[in-house]
Length: 317
Image 1: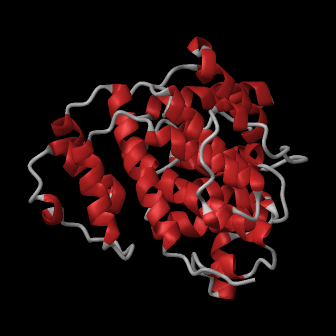
Image 2 (image 1 turned 30 degrees about the vertical axis):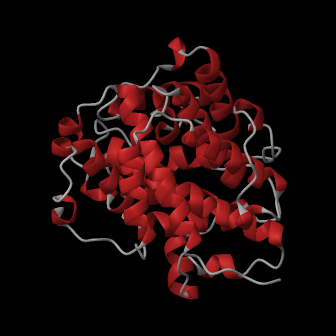
């Protein structure tokens, strides 16, 4: 199948997004159009985990800036090493969609995340202990941050596989091979080219200080999330819960959020700590419009990702 036809088919996968209606490629304007063009150019496809944010253009831009400057842009670490971190974080967060996507990317690069984990005994933290420079460590930590964020968003809005539900079982392996080739990086994207999509923010990410592009990207994303119209009740509840959370999954029961009367607070807390528990009941009870829902989920996911990264061991150089 010709690349243009595959790219067109991948745009149609946006129909698989739950709860919100993303902006189609043909109807994108302004900031959404600018992000979509960069996304297809540098990532190879209109990736649903990013495009689903399009009801809120600033959150769309923030999600892309984080993904591009951590995983896609060239740097001191290899794309394969970054994909391993993405796969390990996604596995730890029980996000089968992201595990499948980045497993395909690793296969296309000639490296298996499963084999890497089995042979080396890697955990999420282990790949971050290896880099010998602050810049390299910042790159891999940024990937971990981006996927702690994306795993949560994907768990809410997407199903368990990046392949459309219409693809029959007999054709899934061939479809995965085609998709994997699209995810394989070419010569690499120059760092920093996405930064102008968002206003500058205060550079308060100490883990990223060794890499100015990464630090700038996450500072801009942080400013975008910080400016969202998320209520103080939600912000206070999520920050309070995260302050004592060790990152362990709370399990399958949602009894731990039953004490909160506000359904929007309950949804935000589940997104932050147990996104695999989000279902129609929680989303419907919150009663949010598309943009409000994307912004609530995005804010809670970003807060949780920042907390998870703060739990990683700090290396002294």
